[in-house]
Image 1 (tube, rainbow, N blue to C red):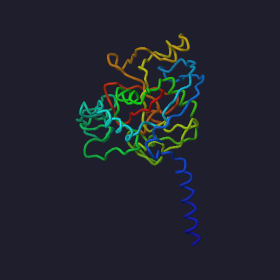
Image 2: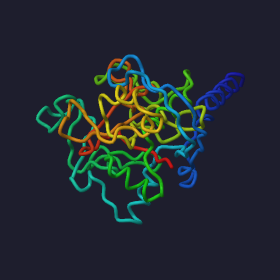
Image 3: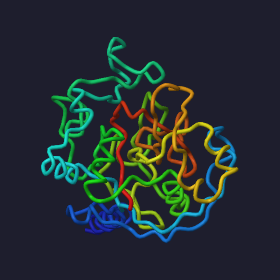
Image 4: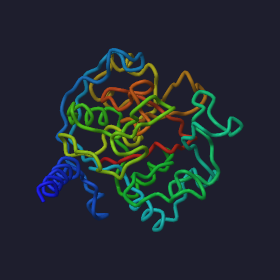
Length: 300
């Protein structure tokens, strides 16, 4: 009897410690909540990455931001009401994480674990014949234009890169768990955080701003074009021009294409390969492509 009681108490403690902090939305209305951010001054950038130096002072006005990453159910409502088709749907496929895939499969030379899979899209993130996306998972395989279209439908917009870093810096708590890769990427994910892949939005504790998944889970699109030298140019500009970001981009790895900023890291980020979940870390992605680990949230 004592053993059963002790097991019960331990189970309750585990549920309290791990589950009570979970904020997975229970309704579409809750999933669409926004949070008012007062804005403020902060130092943007870091001293390690060449495209994020020198650090620049930013002054962010007040704005609203989605509490959660946009989820599958909300995006489905958008497509049903508007008839919208994503870039992946129109192209007939998208990129999925598949480190064990055939070397003959179409992939990215710089990241061979990404394979182009026919039929992969926001409804079937791993492709046809695989499990459908769950309602409260963050919507993925979203190109930049898809994210812009959804935000515009709501009368909103994508956050700027400066706003997105302000959220990350002002909200971080060093001891908070986030959904990232545990183990040696890309060979083995230990899944010690409870998720070997994407997690339903709000599965991990909210940050100090009351926002979920600002770090980890899926990368999030920003409005800004990616410019490798932007911080150098911005250091000589006035407050408003710095805040707006570059009017055009430049990516030395894709000099003739268009890339946009993504922030926050994803479930594929690991200490040995990608620390994109760090508040000051930058990343970008081509607007022509969509991936299994990129989603978004909207601002206004």
